[in-house]
Length: 334
Picture (cartoon, one colour):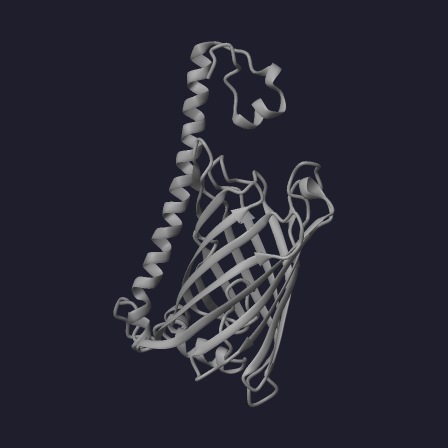
C-alpha cells in the first residue's frame, strides 16, 4: 500500500479514495483491523466445520438406537433426550411419505434428504479461464422435524487460473426446506416443497459478494414408474436491492429428467436456465444442458449408504457466463 493512500477499509477505498488520507501509524492500525476481520471470518468457518464433524461423529451412536450419555435420573429422560433418541425413526417416517428418487447433480431436489454431500466443479467461465470450486455450497443435510429440512453447508474453496492466481473461500450458504405435499410411489408419486436460501457474505475478499442474499424457491416433482421430473424456480434477492454493476436479482429455472435402471443407475438430463433482469449482467440469459448419471444408493453400514454422480454442463446460448462445467458429486445418506 502506498504511504500516501488513506488507511481505510477496502470498501471505503472503492467508494471514496479521496477520503483516505492519514498517517503511516493509522495505516498500520487499519491493516491490523482488516486482518482481524478476515481472521474472524475464518474462525466462523472453522466453527461451522467443527459443528459438522461433531454431528457426523454422533450419527453412529444414534443409528443403533442409542442416544448420547445423559445423567442418571429416576424420572423420564425428558423431551430433549426423546427428541434425539427418536431422530432416525422420525426421519424414516418422513421419507416414507415421499418419492424415493435420487437427488440430481445440479437441481436441488424437492425431496427431504438427510446426508453429507461434497461436490467439485471445474468450470470454464466467460473469459476462458478455469474456475475450480470445491464444495459448491454443499454440506450437512438434516431433517430435524416432519416436513422440514435444513442444509448447513461449508463455504466453497475456489481457485481461478488468472495471473496472479485467485483463490479463497466463497460466501456461506444455508437452505431451509418445507414440504407441503407428497406421496410415495404407491400413492401418487409426487411432491411440492418450498425453499428459503441465505448467502452470508463471509467469504474472502476475492470471492465475496459483500451482501446478504435471500433466495425463495418453489420446487415440485412427479414420477411415472421409473421415470421422474424434478423442477425448481427461484429468484435471488440481495440486501442492497437492484444496483447497477452488482449481482441484481437473477431468476433461475432448473429441471431434471431422470430414469432408473437396475435399481441403482439413474441417467439424467438437466436444463439449468438463468435470466438476469438487472444488475451487471442485465438482460443476459444462459441455458446449460447437463447430461449425467448418478449411482446409488449403495448400503455401507446400518443406515449409511453411498451415492456418487458425474455430469458435464455445456452452454447452448451465446455469450454465457459459464461455457462448460465438469461435475463430480459424492453423498453419504444416513
